[in-house]
Image (cartoon, rainbow, N blue to C red):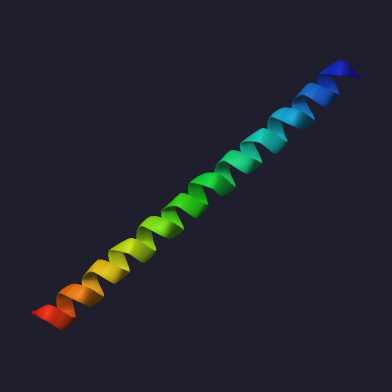
Amino acid sequence: MLWTIIIVLFLLWLLGFAFKIGGGLIHILLVVILIVVIYRLLF
């Protein structure tokens, strides 16, 4: 029973970590798009 709880908590932690990385990548992508748009407008 204890191992089942540990495994479930570990999987939920990995899932949250994966979503955190995905959110970070989305924010980085938005910043890159913003930089490209500003660059296109100026040059």
